[in-house]
Length: 376
Image (cartoon, rainbow, N blue to C red; front, side, top):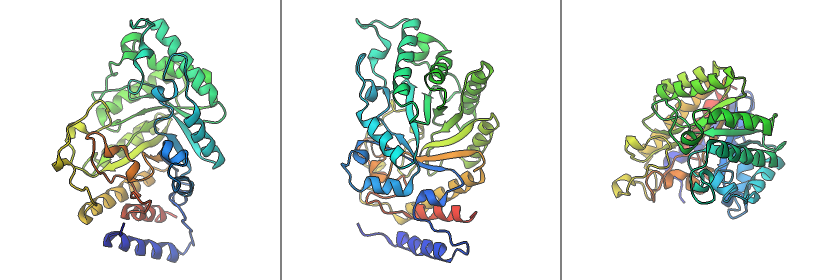
């Protein structure tokens, strides 16, 4: 694909910046630019890891030093039946990461989505009792974490348990076990692997109401003597939201609790999307309309500029908080692999990441690198 003029201009600018830097910093990949600041991660799935896409592995090794399984460790993938575990793909991801000295985050142990119905039912389809579901949760956590003990350094133990109103989501986990299901998940996870870091992960949790709910979780766990090491702010963001002042406040408030802060699933949506679909609630789906998919062939330079400026400001903010932020993970290797092509409106062509569908750096990539080099 022919690179547009704006992209070409940034390549020239980046070359000048790198070659004229009086400290002689060599930046061969994204992770190098942020060495000493925070880890740079990506989410991966079968096409990248199983060799279906032959360009993927060398590219990932070049640009990233942290890795998350996008789907392979979710309950429906790794534990699809009561007596069945599928470790093959997740094993391949972990082996790849270990061979290339990458920090691994297991994603995710307890979540209301992408968890099969059988998890909450007995053999004839009736809802489990509290005790039975706790036992099922414990067995799952012990089996999965036990399989990767000593290999996977960190886990998203509980995912998306708080609603946008700051209250605990009334999921099947909550309805059957009660509001202490989060405590039990962290208790079991620490027992399963005492050396692993344990995180709570959510979307929109930079926003004040939801942030307050997550802060309550952290404090409650700590008050009960349970281990929690970090909070993940997913970062499924847009050209027009959130206000970066709110992101800054969220990072600071979580860090003040004494936990690590990570941006765990980042991308910036560039397509027109109704505000009620902001976030990452996968149960919300909207009908396809051509008006909501305006950039089928390519991203116009005007929007590319907006994306570039947005990423530059975001990384400027993250770098100003590098004493608090331990990792920034992009949710996808390049635009073609982003889930934002099909959610919340299936069939769209989105451009939310730093690399295009041909693995070429976009102007936003060079702008982000420039932000990093300002502080070197």
